[in-house]
Amino acid sequence: MRLVMLGLPGAGKGTQGELLAQRLGIPRISTGDMFRAVLKSDSDLGRRVKAYVERGELVPDHLTVALVEQRLAQADARAGFVLDGFPRTVPQAQALDEKLLEAGRPLHAAIYINVPQEVAIRRIASRRVCSQCGATYSQEQVAADGSCPACGGPLVQRPDDSDETARHRLQVYLAQTHPVVEYYRQAGVLIEVDGQRAIPEVLGDILAALSARQQDVEASGGR
Ligand SMILES: [Zn+2]
Image (cartoon, rainbow, N blue to C red; front, side, top):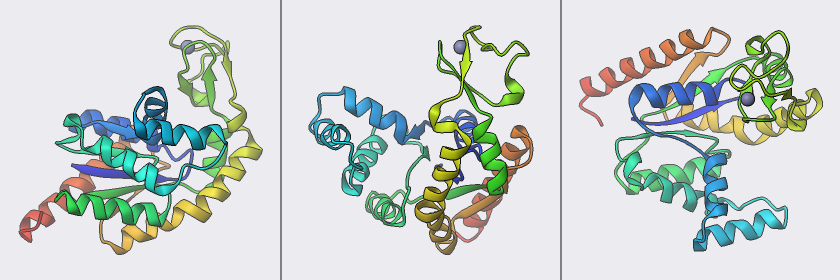
């Protein structure tokens, strides 16, 4: 199954992407992890990406697309993938579609986890990260003494997660990334789920929608 995760920051994309990947036995591919890996590598692409990052500039679409394409061509992604953090813009979505079609492996679905903006801001602002092991928690998951449930380390708020930066990230998202939702809706591959339900329920909704869609496609003799 070839999937893309979409939703506001704080909607639960990362969590659901990981659960889906485990359930379907395919890798979750996050652009954050991919960038970190390529920056450590000694590849030509890595050097080109590094040049932008070091200058504090945005990595241009064609490089990001090349990076994603290279990653999707690896053996573990042959049976499918869950992409998280990409595409971020409509041109990136178009480029991804083009590459996947060329390879004869079009996207099965783009999964949009819908939460209201205020809920997203509240979730981001309540997020805490362990300064020892790096695990991330929502406020409800944190132990009463404010330590990391996994390693007991101290939990802190990332500067990126303050209320103010959360609002800024949301604005950027709405301007650049939200149009991607409409792009996939028009392409007829969008699955929209209510992200305010509990984590297992959201996962159940996604899996049910995927299997309904798969049956439709099989009934119509499609891919
Ligand atoms: Zn920890």
